[in-house]
Length: 289
Ligand code: C2E
Ligand code: MG
Ligand code: MG
Ligand code: MG
Image 1 (cartoon, rainbow, N blue to C red):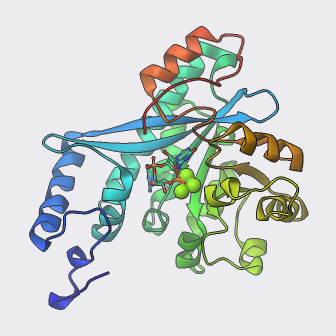
Image 2 (cartoon, rainbow, N blue to C red):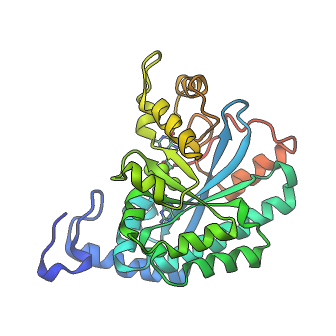
């Protein structure tokens, strides 16, 4: 990261971002406008049962449709939004929109609708004093049970919270679950795992993809760890049938990845729900990155 000129929050470079300070400042201003104009959409990636490929839940993934630059992926604007604080209003929109959509699917498709909604949350949002209240209000307004909601936070985010885990603790008291995203790539220690308010691990895709048949793997070790700690575990980034089979062999039950389904627009997921009122496999769905 390059810093200078008094360490303004706009001056840290991220890979893939426009390479000049001027462009970066402009992107920040455009992001502010984008929140006012609601230039965001959510894609929903299925989380499936490895045994039958059945839809268990969906993870909401935000996209920014920029009026001039087209669709911008989160890696291009979430870090900026975290630095300039815009992640707070953006996250508020994400929670409301995802809960609204999820409740609509439940009403329309009943048992065929996803049972669980996963949302990504930044440390910056969790430090916001009213965060738990905002989420609770979004659940109440859409009639969604807190038990249907999983908040995905990274290990690094939890470490950044230090002792200020009040929002997470409050939400867990309501019945909302907390997952550690990209598990294994952060800086967490086993003692953090034991002490932090978490219910689920999401095995990072690098470990899903590094599996070699017949060899001991990090994926298997993480599953054992999850069992010891009484945590649910989901494998991320399953891209091939071999990876899916290997996960089944070592005892995984839940997974996510392009092999099963790409992130889908709300319309695409809704159509597939309409076709599957028997809640059959989601395998073979196409979608978008
Ligand atoms: P994540 O939460 O770990 O989400 C998984 C990412 O992996 C998504 O990228 C997804 O499209 C991608 N992915 C899914 N299956 C596969 C696969 O089989 N292979 C590969 N190579 N990739 C796969 P995406 O949508 O670009 O999101 C990137 C990150 O941006 C997310 O990582 C999350 O940390 C963050 N993010 C996304 N939406 C939000 C949001 O609403 N709020 C916050 N705070 N962060 C978000
Ligand atoms: Mg995630
Ligand atoms: Mg992840
Ligand atoms: Mg990731």
